[in-house]
Image (cartoon, rainbow, N blue to C red; front, side, top):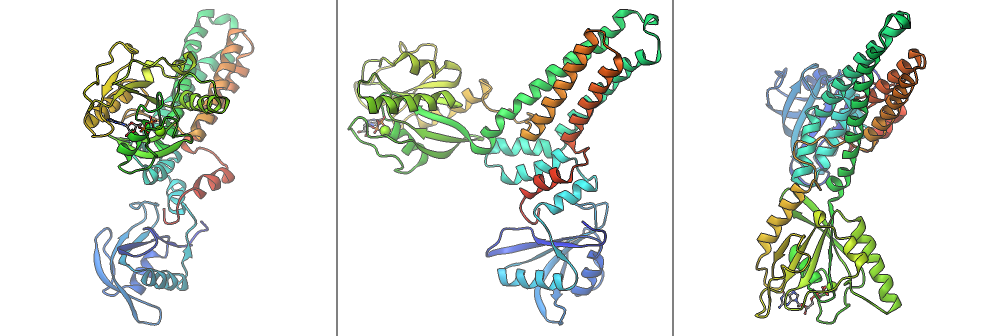
Length: 451
Ligand SMILES: Nc1nc2c(ncn2[C@@H]2O[C@H](COP(=O)(O)OP(=O)(O)O)[C@@H](O)[C@H]2O)c(=O)[nH]1
Ligand SMILES: [Mg+2]
């Protein structure tokens, strides 16, 4: 933001509400506070109940105002927060009046961008502000909280330190003639670089959790026709979402719904039954189901426990590995229901009635436990990188591997040192040690206004 400009935006959702917060950041905040608010100077970080008076002198609203002085605010600049009544007309008049007094409307994410530019947070923390706001499950919140507290930044800074040490060790060879150094001296840095490359590779892999956190864990209900798959979806959603019918083959299209299971959001999909078929159209439908199974994070294989164990096509079973699926024995309300321990004995089994809901709590608890133990979801303390971080890590990894290859082949150490410098630069991008306005524009434009 150009020097001296003060930005203003509504920080709470649009529409009617009991209260709303109008937020300001910039040099003019102290002047605006004394001009617009009754009752004299605001004491920093103390709430004050005041009248807001327009330029023409009429009272727009009673507000609770808080002034944060530069260096002790979210953005690092002087900030003012006005808690007013949540009527859109009041909000509009307040903001219009502030604009008439010289404020500019904030761009999306501009408060957070200012905080980043003023070193109040690193770039990964700034991204976490958006993650925290958009998180749709307890686990997504926990991961965002961790990142907002600077966990990824600390990890990256520590790794940059390790790379700098490796670089220093390597550059020692530049200053001394090669014959003065015993050859095994290179094994230390080489070993460190190999470890760093492996660790970056592992961290990069955590980006796979992003879709689990953002969109929900993709969970597919599969099984033979009439097992009760659509009934289960309806039971979990608490609504008649999918058509349930004693007629096999009723579900032809995929129906997806979001549900919560413990701290996780699940995107759960009902599918057509899988079985051996001769009909071409049905075979096509089953192939599509198998593709879904293959791509799913977790599969619930539902079977009718009053019938003999089904025989499923080999290619279907291949998409339902025991470490990311469970067998759900349905229809336990019926007298001829039996335990099906002999069917896929390596898979976890749960028994339930999708009709009466009996066993539902047990099913949910087992599902949550399986997701945690099988590493399908990130733990609450996990570092989860996004696509931007993964890209930077991948470039850092490549540069380190280049350096290792050069050191191994005894190429001039200057070349390896240059690779390490480039790895450090790539890592620096994660926390924002970059000079790339376009990238920052892109990143912050995904934020909401007022954040
Ligand atoms: N008794 C009983 N019937 C069920 C249960 N679950 C489903 N059904 C019935 O089984 C039939 C097939 O159910 P549906 O959900 O359409 O199965 P889908 O083909 O796997 O989607 C319907 O008549 C359901 O009412 C259950 O737990 N107990
Ligand atoms: Mg169905």
